[in-house]
Image (cartoon, rainbow, N blue to C red; front, side):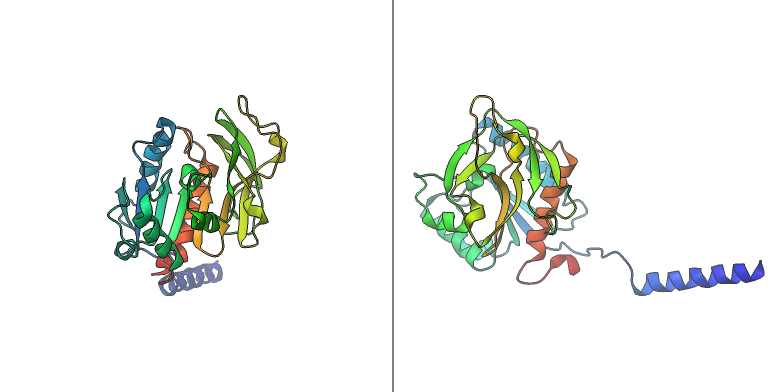
Length: 266
């Protein structure tokens, strides 16, 4: 009995020594990084619904002042020099407007900036007149969509990527309007598709029905520090824990690859 007690005490002492030398947590003493969130308050109501919920979602992630979140409804005052202070730009159904804003965004991304874009932040068609943005997204223009918004079975194209490795191989994403693109980003050798609408969904839609085609909804263009997520329509975007985990994983993955170093290791 005495021998067992001595062994237990020794084990506890060893554990405490390890805990002191290799503490498992890394607490932030100051905010680790800065993020800028951009949204358009005068967009269509369903987009604004998502945006307002997204703002609350990301604000909750700042609790404890682990990082700083600035929110703006216009990029007009954000030159390239000012954007450089942010590890990530979160675009909620909003794009840079005008030549000066587009140029600042392009320079920011080409010099290592981080971007997490939702839904209409990636929308472009024949009227957008911004060829660089197509190269940035790594795909063609808007092609078609399902309507009205509905849930969808989605599939992880890879479960080895940091964004998807904690997700199930398949899950049902909350109701949204999903955009299909032509050409598909999957055809771009620089793009890694992470999540797609399952082929089992076809025909997909009630009023506007997508009958066939490749349908990626989350991907990254490896030429840039970016990720695009097609969710972003309506008030159900944050009701599902799995999709919320996807958003957090994507956000963290962009930030931890900051050219100045991984802020989560500081």
